[in-house]
Length: 433
Image (cartoon, rainbow, N blue to C red; front, side, top):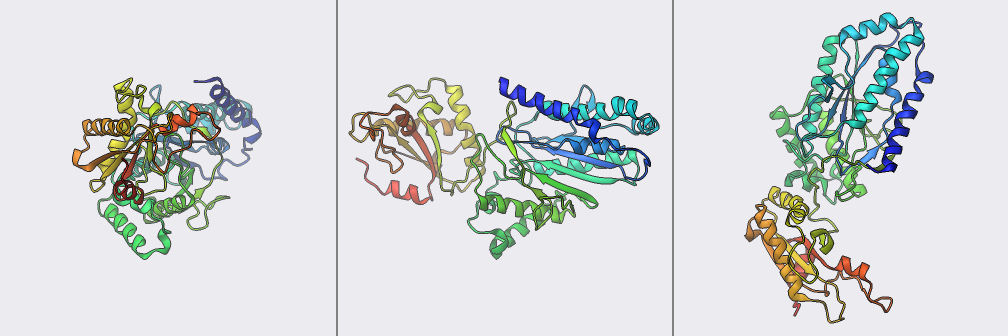
């Protein structure tokens, strides 16, 4: 971990803990507030932006003798356990003891509230996904289970809340965006809520989820979602329409779950659940979920010579394992879309101003095809072509009169397109000799 990240984490913890004294509530009447049972769903994977979490809410919950649990949204979400203890959670006996000591304010604050909040913050900081991918719908069910667990130890007269810090780009389970049907809704170039065909398709998906009992019953549970669509790292950024469609998709699922709107400051006007947040870099040291590729989007998948590790003027990788790791997410995507056929377009730089090396570019496209096939993609779903430095995406390395190696690095690549895309059609219909 670099020094900047260490500094940010230390500052985060210091500010949170230092603020506890000023935030603590006077307990003139410990029954004036219903205690809260809060389940946190945290999508902590490395193609997510790092969300600044409001830690004051935890202090307030513990001050009112509430309880908190944490679920990391990964491929097999479960209650987060560290040092044989459920992160954030305290049993009924501990909460009873806290109430009894609340009259001794300084001791109560030091030994209970400060301790609980600090422990939860540290748990949030150190928690990591165990299984790859993100099963968001299952995480919501686990959150419901956690709230029921807390209710059994706290009693029925409580407030129930679920707070989600996640991109919403689920990649596993009954509802995920590696599924072609779901991806087509997300990448729709129309607003789903204004397009009857898209609305009907989403309703069909939600009906199927409901029939399979995959949608948790969140009746009576207030839900707030932070960071929806806030992707980064290896994941392609979502445009504004993608984000609005994603919000509508999850909003309709949560509506079917009977979730209660939080209507907190900044919440969206349609569902009262989704809140835009300030992000601070990318989540690091966490598993990378399979990135979602918008095959019919404006930008294709581009793997450069440096990423793949091609030796200079060669079709050989420097390291087969590294190349396979780079290509594997693409293979996973293709395999999830059984009707998708792709075109691999090899490109090169043009150091001799002769249109580049078309044979080399073709051979490199063939090499990537070979790797995709080894990773399980059927050979008949892949076409290859080499275009040297004649691609419409070629960037002039000689614009300053001197060959620019930095631009050349970007020109040496294998571009991956849906065979149905307009660009693929134009490339296949052109004579590149």
